Image 1 (cartoon, helix red, strand yellow):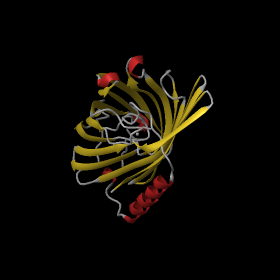
Image 2: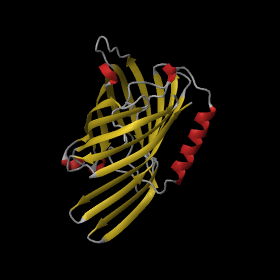
Image 3: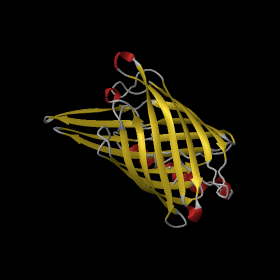
Image 4: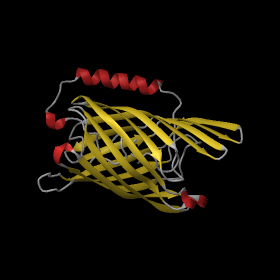
Length: 284
């Protein structure tokens, strides 16, 4: 959902991070240049993103349209004598194959992780797994009647990353997102779903997802949001509950270009203490 996560989608399982911001800066500059060079389309085709909040938008990009959403993200966590820092470059590619259906390719990108335990530091770098997905917009919202816009999202994570970050096998997930347009340009979004992962001895298990977000207008081009996100809801044996409180903003520079930033605070034991992201999204 735009103002949109740090999705989530992106945060289940292994926590990821990135080796350098150079690639992100380069791709962002290219996206900016292409966006400014493209003719502006009708207002009803303005960009609607799935970042920076966790709850996905119910909107699709539209038939024949392509959208790039990329960012750099940081995480920090401390537990007793152990601490960790993570950097990642979450990226989502969206291609509209119909007015209500889009194909999606998502990854946490290039990763760099540093962990210190009892004064001993270990570092890993590489690339995250990729996720193939589909979003199906099934209902338009109607503010007058109080009905939400709704969409189904179907994803499968592939074991395609570097050895240090690769997951076990193919891991499917399904989510349903709903968002209501409220008076005074407020909005509320809710997303729930399930995912399947593999744990010890390659045994499969199912976890849950549940999050709610509220969007608030700040100015004509600026929007803010606050959110409570249950990104990973499972037993301690399988990683525990990852619940965060998130807040951030978006700035719509042009109808097809958006900049954003968000910060998250972990409110459950299994969640990282802090995370922060800054990103750019462009629609072609």
